[in-house]
Length: 353
Image (cartoon, rainbow, N blue to C red; front, side, top):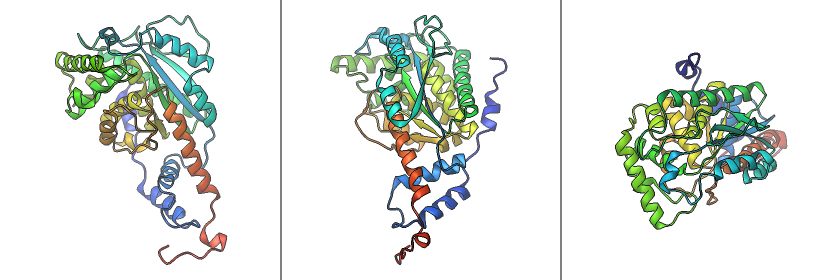
């Protein structure tokens, strides 16, 4: 940890050039179509090219971060904690939903153990960044120490740098961790001041009684831990998760490396929110994949200042929505490259062009 300097990461994060955005939009506006007629596809290509300086994607990668949560002991999930390591094995074997959708998108999935309560014994293909065997139970104390939070952020930052070195042009986030909608709801409540009732939903599909319990658990976690919204690392340490911290680090690292990052759903956006609270220009590099069914998600996205690309009633996580959104970004770049201008196509522009 001694060699990790978060301020040095912040110093490398620059806002996206407004001049570059305008130049790219000017080219789009000259294409043989009514101005603005491809809607948000124009936004995607404009932002991607402004960030990367490229008009294509050489390689796409999704990092799926996994971690266990002590708060699972409170009965806030429909699934037992044993499912977290079981799903990690499934990801590695290529048999999960994110694997299928990533194959469709032409993206590689890499699985990162941030804090699963299981010994994977050198499992081939698994990236080992384990901080501890799961977080503490936020209903009775902090999730982790500040030092652990920083170590988890460092892991994500380093993975972004590795992806850059590997020639990856577009990254995506994913998560796995039974009970992780509970810390995610606590995080958005801490930053927005909204009540847990306003930002907490059913996660894996819990019933009304369990939802009521979950809301009470989050209230208790906020009361006991008193996370400071002016100090995002304090929020992360007190009510977060190791996989959420890894995602936050990855998003920070992407901004520092000049890489666009497609942020998946509720849990991934909790990580992106931490990153955005740490540095204001981080949001320039974020593409919000989809609108989660989780009711707290829209409040996160509003605070980050991003509109989701898709609304498909997804609530799985893993990086599934991120894989789908990557295909939209790739489609937008194909339009940018291949649609001719009015002059090149010999098409008369309308008066409003």
